[in-house]
Image (cartoon, rainbow, N blue to C red; front, side, top):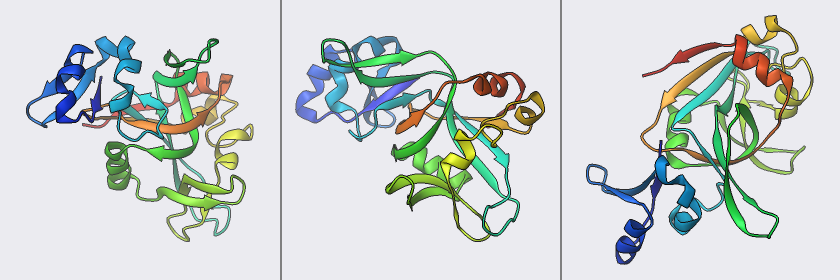
Length: 212
């Protein structure tokens, strides 16, 4: 797992001194995960400043079937997930820090997505895209019905017990598939997430598929 950095030429030596390495093939700087304890030192070079979560480069996409609320056609819905991630936060001294979160979760109310993850979503899940929702009064990445293009709101997918990504039984969790896609560099997002026993059910009983 490595984090791509956007380092101006004049700051190359500074980046190198802070643990960044040069990828000669892709002509870009990056920070290897072994140096993630120095994330704040390279924070100014992280692309897309509105992304406060760094995911594993083995990105997880949870997918399941759910009828569209409007046209009632069968519909594939997805959620971005990660077995662990790093989150930018403020500590007790009011200092910005990057914290490792060592648990599995699914993300909702996704407001920003890095370019490499956008490309993956467009290739594999074109109906997961930005759209305006009244409940959040803003633009968020959302599932859209393949038939009628209606937004499938996050609340109905994540927050209601018994909904597709909030299983309360083993049988419901089995209906979810977790697909893992390898990316060269760690994707970044800005989003919310929650804890709960339903996530344990997903990790224990959902099928896992590695996509090469």
